[in-house]
Image (cartoon, rainbow, N blue to C red; front, side, top):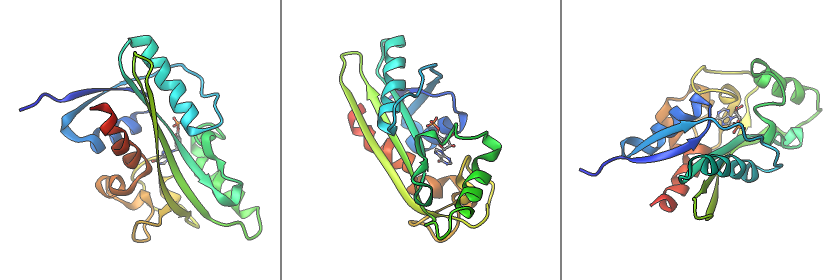
Length: 188
Ligand code: IMP
């Protein structure tokens, strides 16, 4: 039997850690470390790199970070990279619905985006992106998952929101699962 491999993951978000553990399965031990690196980039890739570089510099070990969010087309792709901080957590979902209601004929199409960066002590860097297209539901449904899941209906699903899906159903199609699966070959 081979020993599980360690993935040093720059995050303080327990939801993300749980999801990444479930996505990667028993072959990996996910060690989460919060960083105080400021997310100052305007792209998901840029912010993922900032966090992975900070953890790699701190630990001297290969480090992974993700940056993710929801882009709503009717809101000019907002909140995008600001999904965690454009308003208080309890207002994330209400603000999307309120803002869309204020724009006549606003398209409700949206996507989840996750960029995952790997930074090694020798300076090599890899960044990948996973996305899942969808539409914003008229009202929240389901309490599974986290964040915007109760209003995100993925195109690759059966009409339910991510908030109405099991973990396995979400991980079969999610932006984060797609991005982490894409980074795996680079960790070998
Ligand atoms: P960050 O990557 O730490 O900057 O935060 C990303 C933010 O985007 C989260 O705090 C959520 O608000 C949102 N988000 C990212 N991924 C998901 C997801 O899988 N479900 C729901 N919301 C998400």
